[in-house]
Image (cartoon, rainbow, N blue to C red; front, side, top):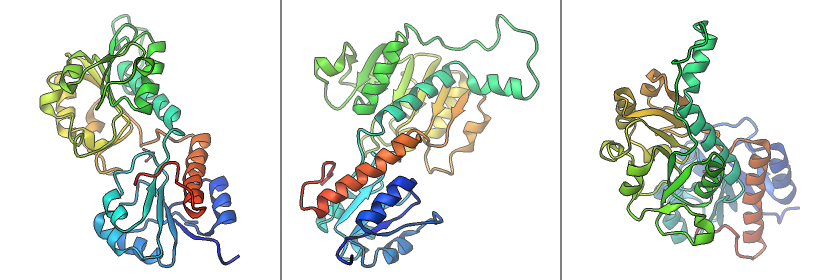
Length: 321
Ligand code: DGY
C-alpha cells in the first residue's frame, strides 16, 4: 500500500511495537539502533509524515525549523518531552505527543528502589560482600536510614509522584509534597501540601524528585536548597538529571549533610558526573525507570495510538499542542 503514512522511527524499539508500526505505516526502522545527530535526523526525515522519537534525540527550534514540510507529527516514546521544543513544532503545524500513564508504575517502583538502595546503603553493602571484605556480623556496622515513620518529601505530585506516595504509605511514611497546585483531597490522601517548595524541603527526611524538567525546575536542588534539608537526608531523583546541581549534591554527601543518594537520571547522560562514583553511598542506575518489557511495549503502543489518531483525523489523546 502506498498511501500509508511514512513513519521514521529514530531508535530500535521493542519487536511488538516495530511490528505494529510496520503493519500500519510505511515504517523506516532503525535496525542497528544507530545514533542520529541533528543533520542526520533532518536528512532521514525526508518524505516522512511522522517521527517516532526518544528522549535521546533533541528537537531544538533549529532542528524543527529544518524538518521537511511532510512531517505532521512527532510522537515521543517517553513521558518527558523537554527534548522537543513544542512551541517551535506548533509554529510549524506539527503535532507533538508523549506517553503518560503507561510508565507511572515502573518509574515509581524505581523511585522506591532508589529510596531503599540509598537509605539502606546497598552500594556499600554489596561492595563489602563482592570485594571479600565481609567479616563477622556487626551490630553497629552498615546502619542505614529507617523509612517507616519518616517524612518523605515529594517534589512534583503528578502521576508518578502520586504513585511514589502510594508505595511509600505502604512503608509507613508520612508524605509531604510540593506541586504547582494543591491536589484535591481524594488525590492528596492525607499528604501535606507545601505551596513553598523550600518549606517542603525542610520536612524531607527523604526526598523524591518527580517533577518534569522545565525552566522553573532546572537546577532546583542547588546548594542553598540542599542546606534546607534535615541533616542526614536521603535524596532520590528519578525525573531528570538537570533538576539537580551535581557538584552541590556531591559536596553535600561528602560532608554528611546528605546521608545517601539514589539516582536513575543524570545531567548530560550518559556522561554523568563521575564524582558520584567516589561516593560509597550513591545508589546509581542508568536511567532504567521505565525499563520493563511490559512498560516499553505499552509506551510504543501509546505513541502509535497517538499517531493513528493524528492520521485518522482525530484528536491525539496525548497531544502536547
Ligand atoms: C520518560 O519517559 O520520560 C523516561 O524518562 C524515558 O526517557
